[in-house]
Length: 287
Image (cartoon, rainbow, N blue to C red; front, side, top):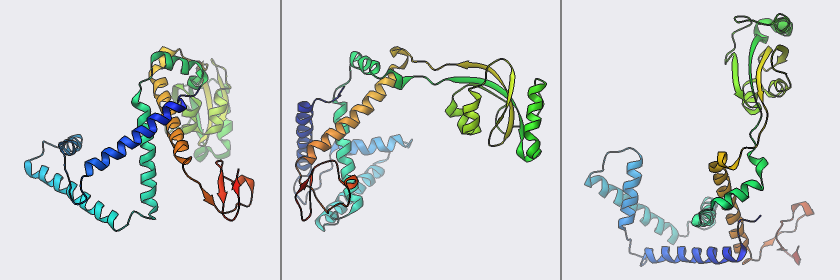
């Protein structure tokens, strides 16, 4: 289901971009006039406040205004000298600003609860909660026991390991309601995968981690589940808005790219050919 309707996007994007550019040019005024508005000063004061600073003095405000003027003077002189031309960093920054402008347009309309629910229902599996496991373990390190670490952990399994056995583990001796991804970060991929294959209620193993061997007692396992919409509504809204921003950004790029004829050097293979039609240097249009 597309989040963006093409005619609406064309109208909003083109209109908003023209409005934005026109507003910026109007605010600039004549070439040699620099206008500092009340809005500019309000923004300076807000930036000052969010840093946790006390209210600025009159001298501090004058300093902020002068810094704003200095920035504008240097910016205009740099543009007049053509320093923005053929500058990779400037080009990249301006391209990012165009992307951000398109993304901002996606926030003009707040999604309704019905839209969010329908979007959630069409991709419920994306919001599935991963399985979780709770267990405790007794650990025998490679550093202390070397090649005997596995046999030592196996003995713990055989005698139903008790408190105080094994080596001191650098993290925790028990873990509650952990996902495979969380365990992978601590024990490594093999342990994180294999521990979920164990059955609750008894000592088993040993399992190997990056640190040594472990006798493991699984307390409980919680299977994967798909929550109801109300449980994840905030998460769904955030994901929906992210998707809509991305689609607005790509749709805006498509609309803008249609205005240009792109000329590229010839490519050696089809895998190097861009997806959009271009005209190769010294040849006809490539599809």
